[in-house]
Image: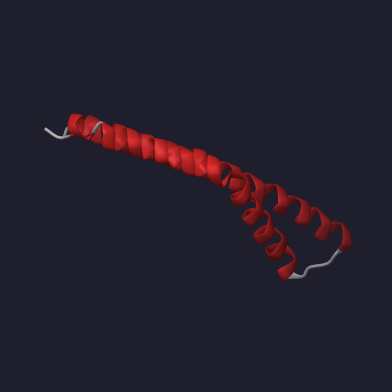
Length: 89
């Protein structure tokens, strides 16, 4: 296995991880921003107010995007294992 092959696999792995986590991180970011604006407007500085809605939103995002995320990871794994003979040698 050459250095270029290892770097290509690592690059594809990082890209897959970023694509898979993007919807969940995006939802958490938007919910966190909305909560921060709400806290600034009402001057309520309760710490649990920030965490509980984000946890619920991330859970719902995983339920909604979970099948797409799993399909993407399975396709990457099938591609990697399907071309395993090309990587060895």
